[in-house]
Image (cartoon, rainbow, N blue to C red; front, side):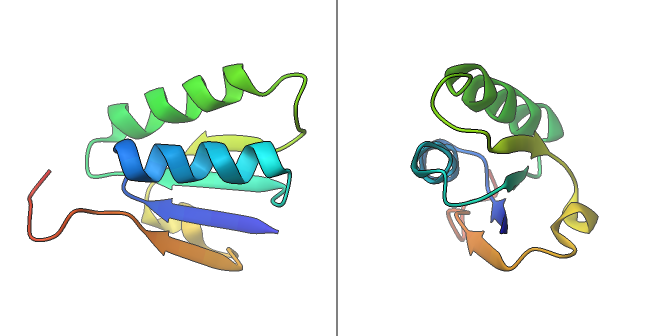
Length: 81
């Protein structure tokens, strides 16, 4: 299953890490208004998983959510961060 997470802050990154540790997704895509934050969080999660799960974690834009079976909104509205 492919999971998309919109918002790569503390909530989104923690959710992505938990999903990856459970091994319940084959792929997790982190999308954030700040692409560098999404990429950094995806890399951090990936580095923590080598022996725990085979989940692929990556960052991308909204187009990367295409094909996701689940999409989670972790943005803190109305905060512009």
